Image: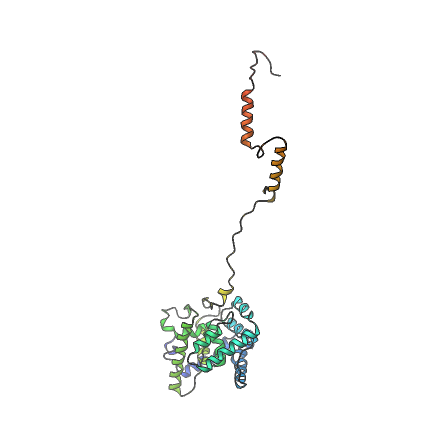
Length: 296
């Protein structure tokens, strides 16, 4: 990455240049989701806030998650888990999280934690929901934004850097967005939103890597793929074919049959038969034919 593009040196003009190329990196097939994420859902929340009760509908949450997955790495298990939340839980949980944020938006971690109670919603997705509520101050925990803001610590890995999606990592991202916004606003005298920085970082990341190359697959939110990961298959004990199986009832029948015939205990074994045969042979006199006598 060029030094002039780094978060420590970038100017507002350069940021705007990268913003202009953002749309070219968004696939046509998700333009509808893009409109929902950037305009429709935030506007719905503004209206609900005016009505005194901001919340997200389940359909809005699933659409945001679909946007997130198609915007980055698609994980079908995560989408299924999010869809398993019921409508009431989504409304009540998002409403509570927004109330917590309104009470103290400096302690945004509490709102993130509150949203994490929904199935399939981890810190990264929680930040997306909260950013729709306050797109000026709250950044979305995207791969490109995190790598961009932590470029100097990447040890030459840059856009290939691995990410752990935790509250700790998100707080580090949030603080760096605040620092960058304050510096750009001080230098330019214009307001800079968190979502503008997110979009510029996305464009920088996509420009850096060819479309045929994907970002490395990171560990997803703990509530995501891990929660739906199928259990290891249990080893099945080998069973003998039906023809080789011993029927306990048939053994009992054989024993009873032997007893009726005057034999005690279990049916004779191979060893007992051989012993009996040897005894009979030893007691039988051996007749040696005379010389010249023919066997008949």
